Length: 218
Image 1 (tube, one colour):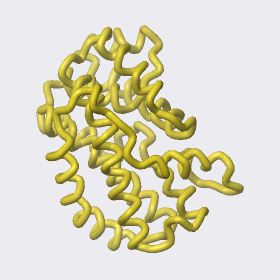
Image 2 (cartoon, rainbow, N blue to C red; image 1 turned 90 degrees about the vertical axis):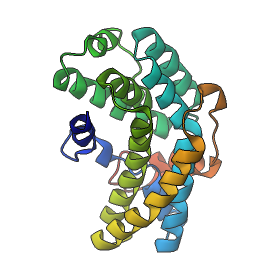
Image 3 (cartoon, helix red, strand yellow; image 1 turned 180 degrees about the vertical axis):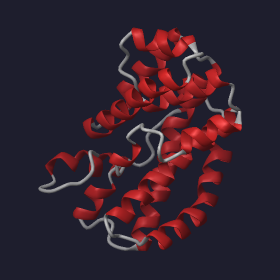
């Protein structure tokens, strides 16, 4: 099963994750994030936001990778994603992952069945359902989601010239400990426990469409 994990984290797997900065580009232009210290704080807040809001959805999608459960969780995520930029990014990445996974893992009929329903397709629900259908370990799947948050923000920071590639790699290694703490304290929770913990991230990300120039989709 580990080979499936390596494929999902492969930067060549075409899901569009690197087209998004998770609000960092807006935070940089608004002078909220200006240095490594600010960046570290931003990433930590984003990791806790992922753990508090999204991990429960991934956990429940993983536990029951069915068409019916997918539809239920997809609708809930859509309702709880409060800013249009984050919602659009989640749908773009989710539908891309579903499209690619349907072809990559053609032996999984549930993916084709979900695609035929023309879902909204939020990323966390697609990822959780895919990991569950592949038989990946639940804890490893939850760790995967936190890794995506950490990796994508630091990748965006590098392309925004906020940090260099070596500094980015160093930060990723240091902040992996924070991600693991988030995992161990927020793992295996139900959707009833999901909540927003960093409202300012929503406000900053919602400003993205008003930026005069931008290189990321969100």
